[in-house]
Amino acid sequence: MLTTEEIAQIEHEISLVPQKKAACIEALKVVQQHRGWVSDESLKDTATMLGMSAEELDSVATFYNLIFRQPVGRHVILLCDSISCWVMGYEQIRDHLMQKLQIKYGETTPDGRFTLLPNVCLGTCDHAPALMIDDHLYQNVTIEELDAILHHHR
Image (tube, rainbow, N blue to C red; front, top):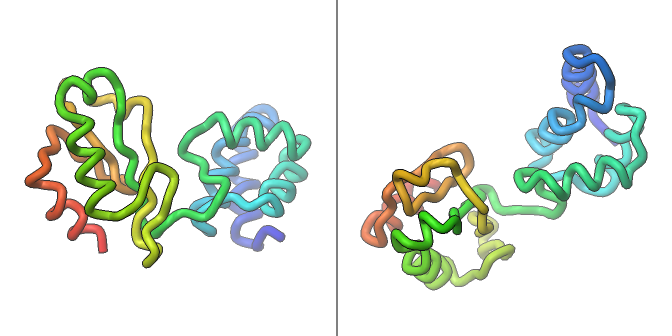
């Protein structure tokens, strides 16, 4: 069940668009902001508010790669695997992260601190390789910087 605060924020997002369905991504973001991810139950409740079926809203949620449909760690690492990042050392960054954190893509560290996910593009190809942790974008990332970057996100 959605909280009063979530409902109010979703209603605000609905008020900004001509049709309820047009607020679907923002509504999902509201739920995720409060809960860290979007459960089946909260997706159904949100769909009802938007006049959509749960299946319709789920198709939006699963298409939009920044909506998490399963629990994630306190910090989500999005590692860009675009061709630019690939050419500039993506594999070394990926391998170091996986070794350091002892997880693979889609997994969360046992302490719940980090979830590691691939990302098609972070929009900073001229500063590859790149990764994002939560809302922090890191450009021209080197292996030497990774430990300090991870330490910053406790």
